[in-house]
Image (cartoon, rainbow, N blue to C red; front, side, top):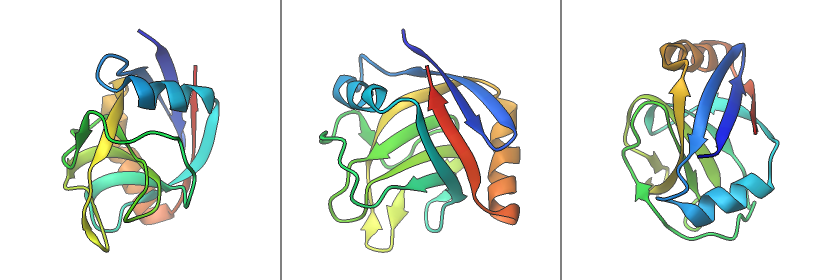
Length: 136
């Protein structure tokens, strides 16, 4: 099991790749590590932060996809009808964009620091974009 560290704003989380459920997505993302971006609060999806990635192409299709990630689950939307994006759920989510419901590949699960997901979400909502870093 590949262990990751996810640093978002002032919070640090341990996480793991979901290699058995989303092997292609995990492999593609691992090649991009360390991955740095900014997390902003979602607009349509509910309680999550997201990293809009424009036309970035990870070269993957759908695997282990969901529109309802649970708190602590990280999904990758590989692009298509909306831009490529990564979403980290901190509460109830119905993954969507201005064009409607989407599904993303659940490929990372946060394993520690779950109590800081809600504070991260509130920080992004009320204070704006937060630096985020995924690393082995």
